[in-house]
Length: 280
Image (tube, rainbow, N blue to C red):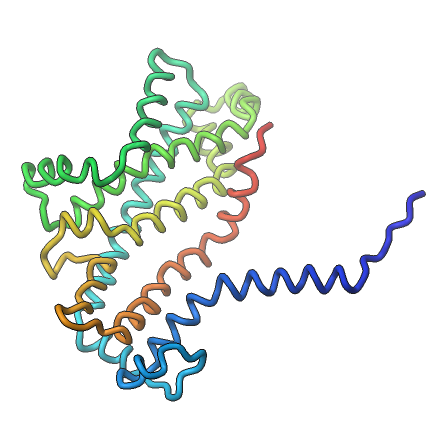
């Protein structure tokens, strides 16, 4: 019988040291963001390279919350991101199920077209999209962003959902249908509960992509009332100066909804990222 050796203290210390270094490296940008946000404006340039600010203030947060249009940008981004995530996940779930369970003419060609759409640089197609959106009268509207974001996220989200459906044996559906369920009932009662991790992973991916997108929001929106958060950050940049403290404070506040969203779906997200690669 093999005897398990206890790892040496040096090896254990090395593992924990490497883990601590990685965590510090990953969290340092967030710390620096918070540090600049709490630093008074008159000290930002004189103490900009110091690890600890000489003084701290909440003035930047007060200005961002009560003397700027940040809350409007914030509200617009939340609405666009949640709507895009919900619509994309719903469409991708249906498409992924169809690709996983049915064989139909043109299936390979359709998959190839969806893959090709992911290869075009966004700068190459922003002008045609701008003309289309302008022609249908949706410029400066959140609806245009939702439509564009949904269209661009559907291909990857579909492939992601297809991988989860492929990992669920068809025998489960067939057994449910033999017991009297229709295909839709088998899908709703058997398959959907098993794909909740996949739905969570897809929701998280699409929400993050829509929340941080800048190019389309910058090109399709030029009204202050419909700006999203990434474009709204540019309002802290003037012709001759940058309000670093207020910009960093807005960045810290913008982390709140994404963190809350991932706390809500983290159980499904972790299961989805691990189970999606396992089939059978």
